[in-house]
Image (tube, rainbow, N blue to C red; front, side):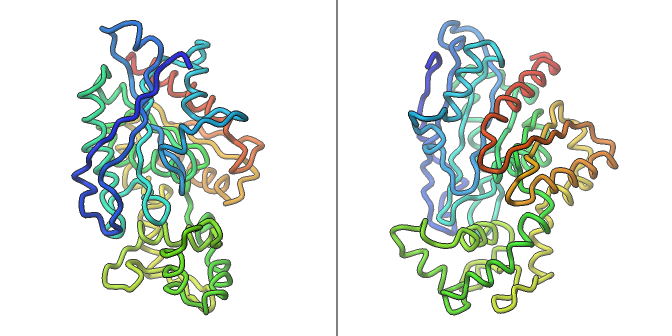
Length: 336
């Protein structure tokens, strides 16, 4: 590696006393490009990379002899002159259920505040960043792609550039079609989500549980928290029949980028970079969501770039090269 990887331990007040009892001390990988190490006077833009559901910041930088991790990939792109030198920061927003969706939730904690109000200031204070909106980007894949769009829409004063790879959007198709599968998967738990959750909480090997149920717990704790429920949240379907509970699902839809966009049109129009893509073989129908999101933005008159590719959800890593290149273009356009 030509640049340098630093692991910061950041204490979060926003996450202190969070409902799931997850740690408030977070390990944050920070990549410094070669030019940062060579020139002690130069300042750099910052890219915040958000990992997907069940991902962690440490897993993102884990060394694999067979493939690049995200830092190794970015280091290669920077070192070969294909993308601009920038500081790369990987927040750790993992929760007991697999992820926070990077939102504030009474069910999981204030992870949006952790990034926007704590981590951004911490990085700007400790490292030679530009410290400006124009020099700050957010990027991610899957749940991280959702997080990138959500944070950019809600905080255009913090991030001027957003890139989403295979991000969660158009919830009816990426989540709603899973409700029947969840009801079926509950069969081994006597049809009760609480029984699944109890076993899951005490299990040493959590990978053995049905992914659709793990994903449901993760999303419901973020989108439809209910501290009066034994679960700590409400699930948006009937446990026996799989039918959608419209009242609960309505709460989920408030987070859907497709539905949030009309409420945040002014914010979206402030973004210098708005890029998203998805593979036409995406296993979670997210390519259809990306098309719907693009159609929505067109109607709103929001400039954006939407691309499709031939990969699925799990084999699209090379598209990160495209995302980083788009951010380089965005920084150049913003004249930073």
